Amino acid sequence: MISKNSLNPHCKHRWEKFFSGRDYRLDKCVLCGIIQTVSKKKTIREYSETDIEEAVKIYWTRGDEWRQFSRDFLRFLPKKKGRLLDVGCGSGWTVAEANRRGHRACGIDLSKGMVSFGKKRIDKNLTAVSLQDFNPSEKFDYVTMNHVFEHFPDLTECLQKIRKLLKPHGRILIAVPNINSLTFRIFQRRWYPLSPWEHIWQFTPETLAKVIKDEGFLIQKTVVNSMSYNPKNPFKKLGFIGLLGFANFIGFGDQVVILAKK
Ligand SMILES: [Zn+2]
Image (cartoon, rainbow, N blue to C red; front, side, top):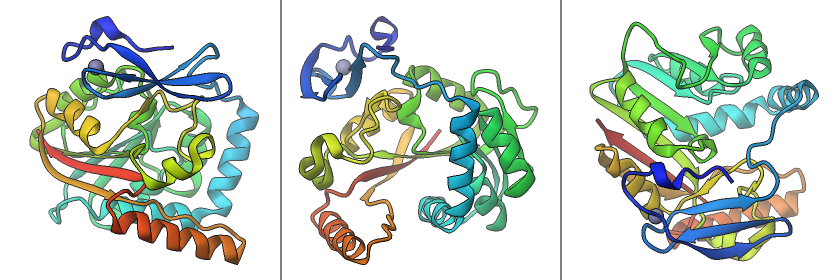
């Protein structure tokens, strides 16, 4: 468990059990509503080089899906082009897509393996560095995090650093899984974005907005929709399209996207 309760300046967090898995639990704060993963295992999985090789193979062979995932995400940015930083860029699909759209984009990621793979094949503007150690000479118009924020042990520290990296009136665009979704209610332990060994936090539209507002950002847009999936089995695919379409229709899609201004 990594939560730094005492360091959160906005809530003293009082945890109650929300959900139990086999060897993990999700606890919900009765005061602010945020949900965290509690586990005796390490919450953040350490990736071996073999894991990374496997991951980059998947990233490469499923490039079309990643490109689509990045497009679906970036369309929530304002039309104006600018200098953009993608935090947790992986092998750089979002950076490549942002550059294709006319932004001046670069990305940072903790994984040296993903970055070196991506630099060769996807976009050269990637650096393997942590957010805290990243100190560029020029500030950004946009900082984006596509399904990355839920991996950060200290959310306040993360947002404060992003504030420093942004120009005045710069924007952040954040997408995370929505635990207040129809698919979580249906799939429960088998909910695909639960990832208890990787996702330290689970958000709803309200708790994500609160964390962002608490750091002084002004929320400009909140969208609840669903990620695109592409199962090979055509029946599964049809089922998914129907289910996610319905979930979106009733406002309980499986991801939250928030655009906010510094
Ligand atoms: Zn709390």
